[in-house]
Amino acid sequence: MVRRKSVKPLRHFCLKALPALVTGHVRRMAQKASAQQWFGMLTMGDVTFDKEQTLRLQVDETREFITSQVLW
Image (tube, rainbow, N blue to C red; front, side, top):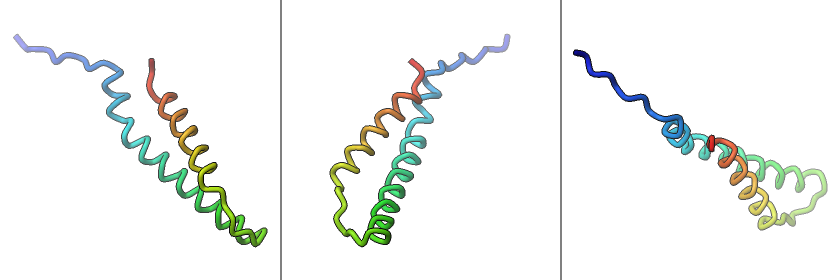
């Protein structure tokens, strides 16, 4: 008789895809922050850029992104 392979749970596939999703999301957020800094410097001539606030917003968005990708 042929042995059947067990079906992997959906959680396995969600967690397997998560590192690539997080890497892509972090890269997009870094690119967005860099673009915001350059845009602020070019349009307003303002060199001050609140990096802590931008980082805090990015961490919050990344946390929300990760929790939205895993099916509970």
